[in-house]
Length: 127
Image (cartoon, rainbow, N blue to C red; front, side, top):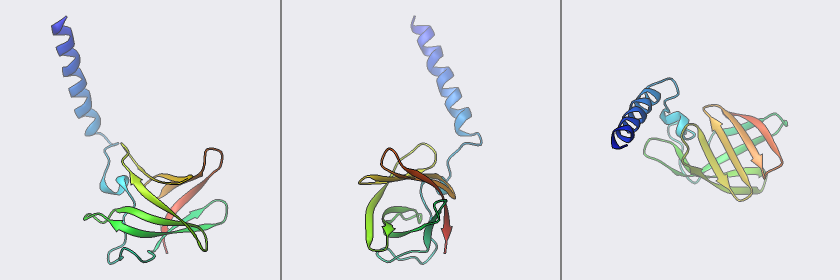
């Protein structure tokens, strides 16, 4: 019984190495939105969600990692209505979640979710 368990662990390790070296390997740009160089936290950035509902949703950084990834931000869903969102670790892609709203994405494609029953496809662009 012990040998079978050891072989199962070895197979899982080999499979893990094979999967991590394949085309689905996450890069820094997959783990969070990258800010343009020189963007200062606290001010509105040049990152905008352009969505299929015809609206644009600006994202204003609050905190940025040393690698330039957006960690926390304000997501404007109306001109004077911002929701605090925070990067949630994911396997591949990114998620920014706030109260009643979250954004799931991979590179420049994203899905903006307004609760459990309303969502819109968006593209991430630099204005």
